[in-house]
Amino acid sequence: MPRYQRILLKLSGEVLAGGGSFGIDPARVESLAVEIAETARCGVQLGLVVGGGNFFRGVAAAAQNMDRVTADHMGMLATVINALALQDALEKQGIPTRVQTAIQMHQVAEPYIRRRAIRHLEKGRIVIFAAGTSNPYFSTDTAATLRALEIKAEVIAKATRVDGVYDKDPLQNPDAVLYEQIGYQEVLAKALRVMDASAVAMCRDNQMPILVFNLNRRGNILRVVMGERVGTTISA
Image (tube, rainbow, N blue to C red; front, side, top):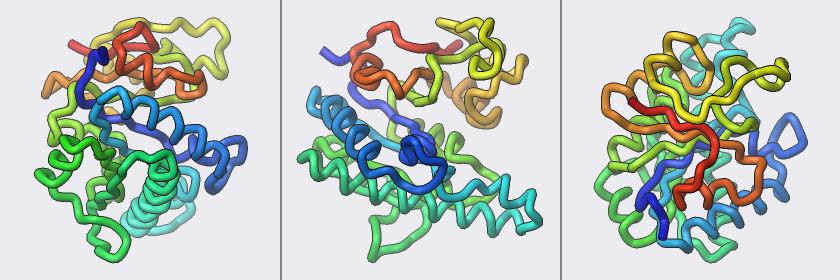
């Protein structure tokens, strides 16, 4: 039996690029869809938020003298491209999926309507929330937290390239120590770059647990929803 009935899965856009540094790797998207589909078939209600970093990073673009608001809007559109790619791959696995966007684009996807999103979840459809919050200066981490709270998810499952939250970057420091559990306040105080500070603070204020795990280990999404000990839990 799954431990969680409804979760919000947060993926980075870079995950969809696979071994490349840019764009969408069809093989990686397909393997990810297979894994998400397995989880959905267990009866877990899944909301997804995917970033747009494989196409465009708003902050990096702003650093190159582009207007930050324009750059962030471009980043939001990149998340829509990723959401549509993921929707296509999931439906090929036989899982009904809906994309809802914070920026209205009726020919492409549904507008985000909270009650409709919850109804989709109750009917066993995966809902992918795209275009962030529609506001510049807010990351997809913040969008994921907002949507998780709105749909009353039980946990935010944040997929990363490492096994969880470390005291320093494990990719650069082999002696980095992995936390099994850590508090919101400690994450903020130590400036551990798991999620944006605003997203962590919002989770803290609303008692929304965050589970950080390694997406590159096959089967980890299923392990998370089944309540197995995977990655790091951030909670009160």
